[in-house]
Amino acid sequence: MLRAAVAPVAVDLGYGAAPWTAVELLHRLRTAAPGVRVVGIEIDPARVAGAKPYEEEGLTFRLGGFEVPTDRPPLLIRAANVLRQYDEDQVAEVWQRLCARLAPEGLLVEGTCDEIGRRHVWVALGPEGPRTVTFATRLGSLDQPSDLAERLPKALIHRNVPGEPVHAFLRDFDRAWAAAAPYASYGARQRWIRTVRALSADWPVVDGSSRWRQGEVTVAWGALAPRSGSA
Image (cartoon, rainbow, N blue to C red; front, side):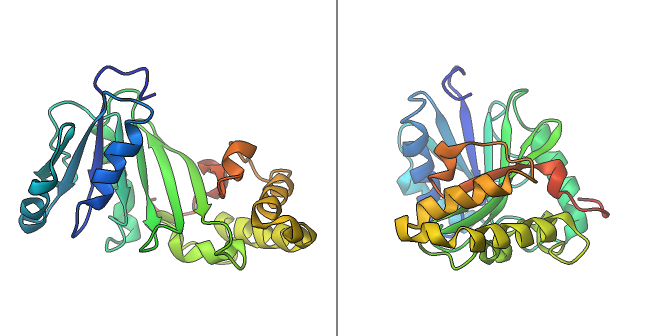
């Protein structure tokens, strides 16, 4: 998507007290698309002022929020740990606002991660709404897949209860992980791959082994969406 676009814009929304995620996003995305520009957006003027010295070619910082004040519609918006303080019933409205700012072929990635990025769960949304949920972990740091439950995005974290799809998914994930225990002797990566392969028999896993090897698994949003509520 980035490679095919002309001068694509990516946004790091709510980058936090320090600008490091925006700086890293620029350099990582430029390995795939050298012409990409990154805009870091924060609602706190002090954080924007503190980030200004780190601007460089292709990287700027601006004051703003969900209106996403960019000169052209972004192809990518990343919002990590932004909705944690919001109520669940506010999520759908925020998603709609952010997706409305996307370029027609754009993508919103909204989720929650731990402080050093070892565990992260995010929803990927296009202009039409949510598409997938991705569970990602640094392999070797996980006791069982349901440890990722504490990093579920706001739309799902209160739905990890019996009767909700995400609860059933994490239950089945743990069972598949336990069944794959013999593969642990070959390393956490091989155990994870075996686990996800077994999980995909009952759940709509939409990625493949190249991502599983990185400690990821992506599932169609419809399979995990809340049974009720506004998210």
